[in-house]
Structure formats: C-alpha cells, structure tokens
Image 1: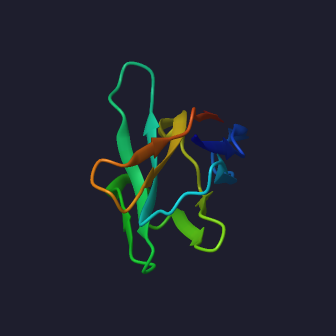
Image 2 (image 1 turned 120 degrees about the horizontal axis):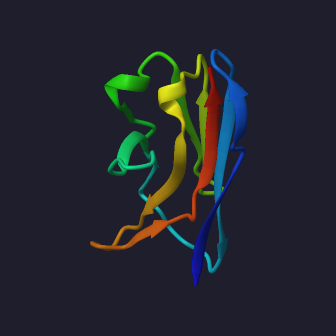
Length: 117
C-alpha cells in the first residue's frame, strides 16, 4: 500500500515563504509525474504545479514566478517552494503522483497552508 505524506504547511504572513515536501511511504512505487494541488474552502481542487520525470514543469498562472516545483527522482520526492505568499494562496495542499499504469494515481491527505494578511 502506497501512501503519500506531505509536510511543511503552516501559518505564514503575506509575503513570506514556505516549502512543502511530499514523499511516498509503504510499498515501493514507480512514478512518472508528481504534482501539487490545492483546495480552498468552498472551492474546487485545482492544479498548482506538476513535474514529469524528465524535469518538465507546469504551473498555474496564479503561481507562476512565485512557486517552484522540484523533485528527487531517486526518492520519488517532490517539493514546492512557495515565495511571496498571498492570502489567496491559503488552502489545503495535496500531493499527487501518477504511476506508469493508466489510472494509477496516488494522493496525500493534504497539508494546510494559512496566509495572514
């Protein structure tokens, strides 16, 4: 059984920074892509950033230039460096991983990011 575990969330003032981490636990897993999603109260879950094993990245327009996703392929670990945080970035951030088999998707339980104005 594979589980993704996020860490690094917390309370930060607007303009501050946080670094989220996500790593798998349990059975060994092979992934081809990892991503961060977020969900604010009353809103749908949205993609924040993704990274392929090749290193190719993709970002939501709202975080471009402020957030950086990176990964460690050997450890199947993904990070999200969040700078210049805004109150609208506050949400539960979820880690996502895709395996090589179609439909093989894993989710973490989320880590809460709170941004005070």
